[in-house]
Length: 96
Image (cartoon, rainbow, N blue to C red):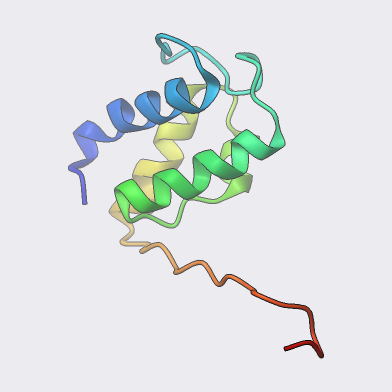
């Protein structure tokens, strides 16, 4: 896992990539930068993969700014909340 001092940089990089912006400041908000729900889901999954921390969609949606969200991610990392594997369903119930 990335050291907690590097978390803000990783989060900012992922936000910038997902949102298609050049730079994200600590005072920027995900949705204020044009983010929408599908991008939020993608962001959470990318951060789980990169940081190995159980980041949630609720964490992202309730954070007003990058700094707020980073604080939530850092708290989860320090608490040792590992990311859970994503379960992917391949078919409908009752189908092969």
